[in-house]
Image (cartoon, rainbow, N blue to C red):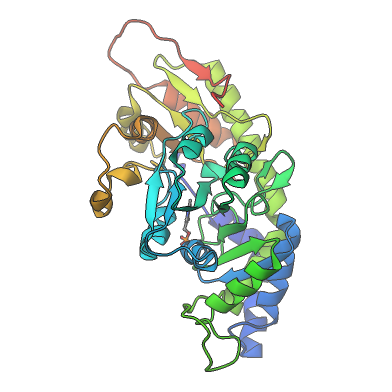
Length: 388
Ligand SMILES: *Cc1c(COP(=O)(O)O)cnc(C)c1O
């Protein structure tokens, strides 16, 4: 049996007719940028995320950059963030000449530790960039308190978390600006690159609308220097076909996660694994299902690959140790939990169309990894308690 990490064919086949009709509609209109489809999607995403404004842009990476531009982040400023995330979270900060201040993560959720974030704030801190990793919101209640106390903004990197909730509130509505990605592998994926910004602040919304079109509301007049970053009509039309199905897909992911938890408990591998921790206040939408395998992560990846099972490591090198950020002066040991997570975690296939028999096969193969005898350490530990 083959179980790829992600298979988009099932979703495509189910929506093929509708998708092709939507694409044809755009082609027939010959309107490709900033038209009706994009505006309709903006309205629909604002509704979906429970925010007042949504502004399309060219990618999730650009959304992060535009958000920081709209907040006037510039050279000399600091932005507190997590090192255990996709590269774009931090590169948006350095592209503006600002300094990413990396703080460690909560080892249970892999999201930024709010206490560590609070301690890292200085007079130069302009914002906190929180990431809702794997589809679970960071501890936003605490982060919002910290941000309010210091009168700084929170930018949510919600690229992996569309539809996730924290205490009943949707990702994208929890900070000053929410940033989404429609990269094809995301829970709501387009047919190419795409992104979206959300906010409840009318002034920020207006600012975002300007910076995505070179800073000019009137053609050929530029009040400030922006960039060109728009969501095109073809992407918007494709995403509008998919959005009504997103909640159903998220529920299937959640159900698959529950089934993995259960099957892993039943099978009891002979090495330690830790299944995902879900905070009580969270609606986790399982963009990824990530196991912690303290001793045998790399052996497990190899063993699963030999059995036709795809896995992913998100992420193997924490950002504070990336070569391009050496100038920031971080060293190994500065964020020990992020470094440990980079060594110990692995994502299993979790996409909505995954079948029960595929899941049983994956878990059977996880459990069949033979490890060299060690003082007995027992098997599946589900994380019971957050440190936060
Ligand atoms: C995917 C992703 C991004 C970037 O989105 P793109 O649309 O690929 O530019 C940013 N942050 C996180 C956490 C992501 O997973």
